[in-house]
Length: 577
Image (cartoon, rainbow, N blue to C red):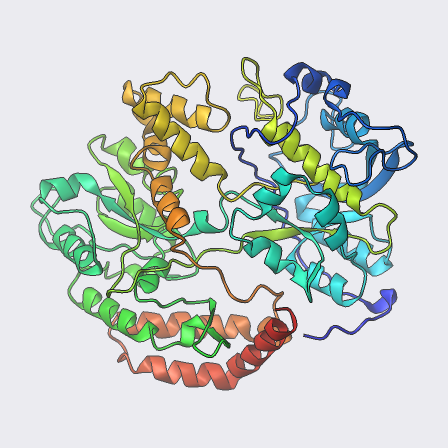
């Protein structure tokens, strides 16, 4: 990918900015000075400021919380949507964070503009075309790459190394360094990645199984893919609902196969060490596209057999994911591959319609003796870039430190955390902050704390957010509130996050090896190539084409644009190792 510099007037064709600001939170960590909740709630946080000497710009060189005197101003741009709710008189321009940023750091953040997320792309296009960029902003990978190529982004390596707090540095590496690597170009840190709690390892596939049917048919938990097939077969053939009709589905999949979760086949392919839509390293260290690797064939062959044997729904090719969810709700489905949130939405109606129905998530198991490594989504899809040449690039790093300090590290024991969602009003002040992240293990830690509290028969009073919320829901479920079943199956001892914790602790997952923006040929050819792939897979599964159709697809993929894409991907990878 070219690194040539261009003039501002012709630098960019703008693209959609990923505006993902959904925040979870983890419990407190004893790494930074604690701040009283009273100071936070009132905005009078002076008592929590580090004691520093009076200087002109940065009150203490290298201090992650050093205050600017006189105060400095940083400009940015923002978007909001229907999920943003404010107390009377508050907005993104003036809210609970405004005095905290000014009192603690001497930083005033000015929003050059704030628009609804539906208009953000258009407004961003105008800003980028004008060349009048804010001091910092959140952009997607494509915009970030074009800004970097146009030499408009500050290298914040020194600022980050010098000013990032220990907590910030640790939090940014919870994913093993994947997010930070994705914003490092030729050894230079060109952005702060906005890591999110449901990206990275938390996005890994798992297999959801209706366990009340397993118990009825006396089936053991799956340890191998042969076990998974045996369970799916029993669900399809052995009348698990007891109605005397052959109307149950062993393995549920949707028509988009690998493009939509839940009821995706991505986890199925991962069990065969195949990684559709993913770039992986081959034995020589070259990046190759998982969708065209030979590991795909045995998985397709097995799916074809399962369809022929009636284990897979005969109508899958015309069913979007929500129709598969309707099968689950109606008590027709017994097993599907999905993700950590499926109990909350995909299976919740089945439990509501049939209180005896129960589902549980299990890890992806391997089709052979080698461990399965589920593929996971990029650790970040939104990135905070700093305009090249601003006087205080370290100020953006300090803002992130401040967010982490108040949101994650402050002890709110005995009082309400003022930054989490108010259940009565739906107001969520945590979202207002202009630079924020979530450590990759936020929800994993919440799960572990809940499990420990349940084990010790505690009352949850000492749990921080969000563990306290999940503990309360699970406690209510166990006391008879069946509407909270989803929380038991997500954060409980046998919940979906137990699977994620297993992946995380054992490092049995992998990221996409290509972290760049879509290449020129990807932009031009990807929609065609993706359509070809789904058509090929569907025909093979349904027996309308032999498994050798995969080889034909690979050849066509390469000639239509795949080889060009592979060259572009490896060119980028080799330049940014």
